[in-house]
Amino acid sequence: MQDSNVSTAISDSIVLKKKARRKKWEKLKSQRQLMLMSVPLLIYIIIFHYFPLYGWLMAFQKYRPSPTATMFNQEWVGLDQFKFLFTGANFGRVLRNTIGMSLINLVLSFITAIGLALLLNEIKNLVIKKTVQTISYLPYFLSWVIAATMVSQALLNNGIINEILLALNLIDKPKLWLAEGKYFWTIFGIANVWKQVGFNAIIYLGAMAAIDPHLYEAAEIDGAGRFKKMRYITLPGIKSTFVVLLIMNVAHLLSAGTGGSGFEFQLLLQRPGNIAWSETIDVFALRYGIRQSNFSLATAAGMFKTIVSIFLVFSVNAIAKKIGEERLI
Image (cartoon, rainbow, N blue to C red; front, side, top):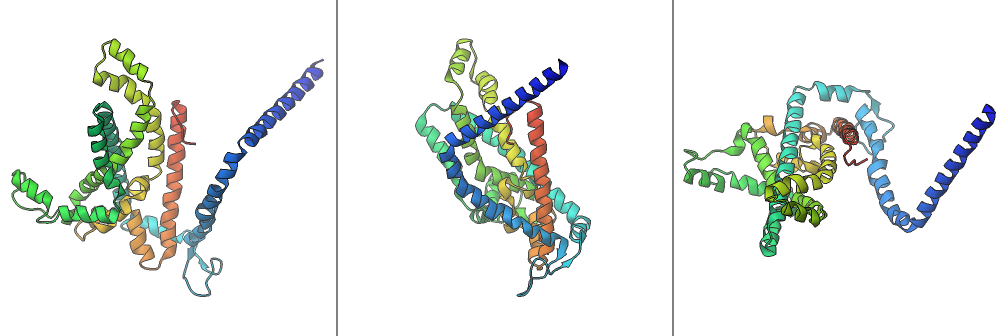
């Protein structure tokens, strides 16, 4: 009798699995147009994002390009490139700069974007709202070359920053801001906010637009003011968006900027006096890898960044899952 029950349970389980598999295929069949539309994107990702990964082999070689060189007739050196990278005299400083500026950018970008979105959401005059929104996100469309040039000009000895500070009697004489490393992280943080806050705020404004307006009406009937509605309705309403963006931005923690945007800024504003504070992993790989034709070292640095980024994304995603928030994966 017991054997009969066990066999029945097994057969039922098999039937349920077959039904679930059939439903899955039926769902895929009903969405075949979407599947076909995603094929070009899938091919693009495979060709330009996965296929080039075989180049990681250079990190374990002493790669020397030549007309007859291939990836498989190079001198294999094992982990020597990683040892040189991690034991280099500058690596600790480079890692400190990268993480420090990344954290500054991460914190400031979220605080300023959410703050601007909250303020814009409270503006009822559409003309003023659109004007402020347009002015705030226009710098996002400037390339970092142009943005870095504008920042550099503003920070010159006779630049607008020194002129304003002198007029307000905040400094006694003009300062060479880029010549002193201790100011570089502050300059980087402010420049990132100026360039990206408007565009980042658009994402949160979209999330706020999806909040049920009846919640605000009910809160207003209960006597809630603007700040209480922000605290108890707006901020909880955009929490899932915040978590997803946090996971995505953590992936760029070793790029010293959202999406790696800090690399151009730091390279273009680097001066002999601030190199101890402005040199990041990307700049290090460019200087000691690409410029010196040590492509293996540059590959090792890129590989290190990628592996750490993947680990961070999965870690933060797991934490979000554990606390019951929205996840990216």
